[in-house]
Amino acid sequence: MKVVAVIPARLASTRLPRKMLREIAGVPLIAWVYRAVERCQSLDEVVVATDSDEILRCCQKRGISVRMTSPTHRSGTERAHEISGALAADVYLNIQGDEPLTRPEHIASLLALMQMPGIEVGTLKTLAAEVDINNPGAVKVVTDTSGRALYFSRAAIPHDRDGTHPRYYKHLGLYAHTKNALDRFVRWPESSLERVERLEQLRFLENGVPIYVAETPFDTVGVDTEEDLCRVEEILQKEKK
View 1: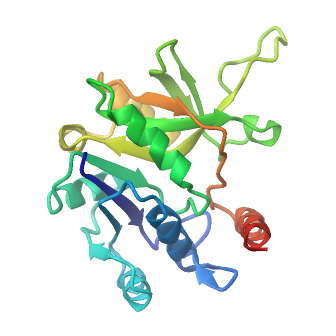
View 2 (view 1 turned 180 degrees about the horizontal axis):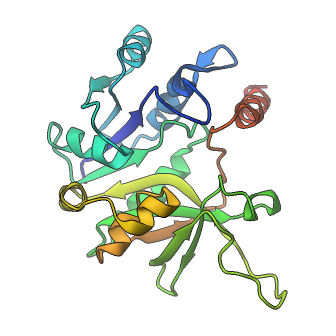
């Protein structure tokens, strides 16, 4: 398979302003993410997709492959779709620009999914830490016995009505798509569940496109708050030592 990894990066984040350019151990967040993805040797190309001149200049300064995309995109998936029109590939990875702890093992798991017949959209899950179960910033996912996603939510799903302590799975912000799946995604209007949860992947489920989910033992920390930024810096500093 020819695989292109796209890292959507916008500057107008709300919970953590200008987070793509915030520094972790002296290096901008977007550079951490790019270098993490680049470590996977199965990829043919890695590109940052942005609508920000500042992010563009930051990437160019550091030798990071970057392309300008439309400022009208409302999601990373739409930004990845624009890149798919310029770079031909069998599979497009959408690695959220706030995932600096991305590992080659994550990408290998995604690519293994996409080698299975008939799968057009894939993503990852990991066992949720106790702190993430009721945290709306950590998205949860439930799947059927074949690994197909039944639902994604910011709520704790499944609801533990009788205190049976089920396993909770956290969804990780890494996706794999075929070109056909991306083409269809941008043709559909924003779906009702997508709007309520603010989770773009629900557009696929509401339109009948299955998302298959591989499990990984490697958790990540998506950077959405100052607390996340400090937590990631501590982890990366430890790994560096």
